[in-house]
Length: 157
Image (cartoon, rainbow, N blue to C red):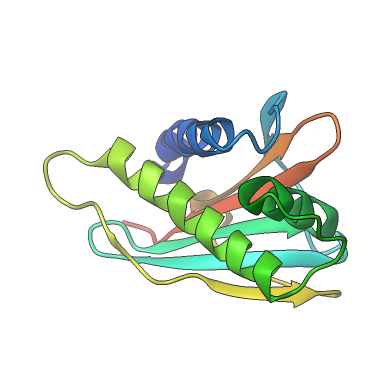
């Protein structure tokens, strides 16, 4: 049975490709539905953006630390080697741009949702549990050197 999440995942993939390509962050070689827990990935930089309105839920970006540092270095032409406030800020801004590009793709003449400002955490042993697996999908975006994950969770209609 297809859910709204199933219908929206291709639009989310398009949005990620647009943002990642425009900033030349990485060459995405594949974007696949990810099955399993992300709780074993350590350490992470995690950015969450809440959605309210006709579509309610959350988009969560999971960046392994090395990927988050790489993206920050590409975005700001810096030479960082570890996670700091700049890396966390970049993860939040990148997530915000992806959600904005996604929002443009699913609009049908009216605003599909309002989004919160990103909340970003980093560290080890980060655990996020979702109980509604039908309206919850994770996509793994991978390239030669980096991978990251986006989770789209919407409330049931």
